[in-house]
Length: 463
Image (cartoon, rainbow, N blue to C red):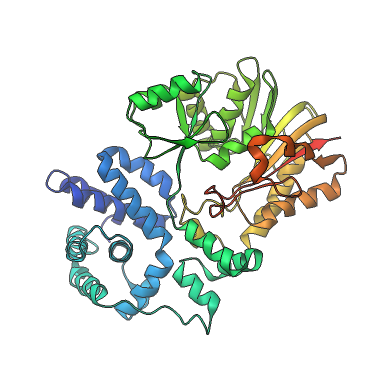
């Protein structure tokens, strides 16, 4: 290839902009799908980099095309293999991205006429150098898809195989979900994973009262949804406007409702000093900074320089000056005095299996051995983080995963070796957490139960 295909797609999208905004937005979606597939890019990061170039309606379309195509890729690829009669890894990646996106529209979006989907797919192929020669192939496959719909696997012969294709999840993950939750609940979970996540934001109550900020958001055109558990949590009816004055002035931050519960679970008092042991990208860090107030302090640690930079920029936008950022590796000895904090948070790196709505590509990247592999690292991090907590202090361990190895498995392994810690049973008295705590006092949420991202969290107290 003479040049990077993704750069070529983007260049043609820019050239198309003035003549055909709709085609330009679809070229942007194809570029993102290509980068996710070929460069291991992350859809949320890539969308964040491209969406500001477009108008609001186009942003919504691009987001829907990208996230929907990634979520339904398993089912789409199953059909494409039968419609093309060939192995998909033999098709040029830009061509495959175009056809995946086209088939997603044919099967899951009913507002776009089928002939328009076919014509657009062909036009996209003609505008991308590495796909131009395949425009006739794209046309034939897309037209065939309007006439034929390949049958799903026979459920009676292979239930898990059928469910994997029907709900577009890898088979190993289907088998785990069925083993953990039963077939009926596993199907509900996978159906929820394929839906759009709620548009949740966290109000920055250090900048004003809830009523004052809501009035400002309403004034700027935000559609406010129903009340949530915490005063800072808002679920919007529509999308947040990240070009609004309210956003630039730091009045809110986009953060899922389940994620916001983690800082509330630690619940440091005003004036406290808190250790945040894996702070990037900064959502929970800044939430803690808000809770402890100007007289409090957050020591925010991460080993990722880019992540620390992002967290620092977020703190600057939200105008929190009570955070000290430190680059350090929590899997090894920390450059801090042992047992010197009353409160600590470890929101550990994880597989992300609880966030498949926002990050649908994760399901195609994580493998069956990854939860156990991550759990080993998470346990090392928890032991280091917990060593920073003094007697009578508390630490919250959390992950955005519903894999038991990364949740209760890590806590059980930790408690076996550290009898000086115990699970905080007093959380049952916290009204905002009542419906998300299990019998052991662990926070466990799922998208099919209350619409929350899949999180696990435990609050441990040092005796």
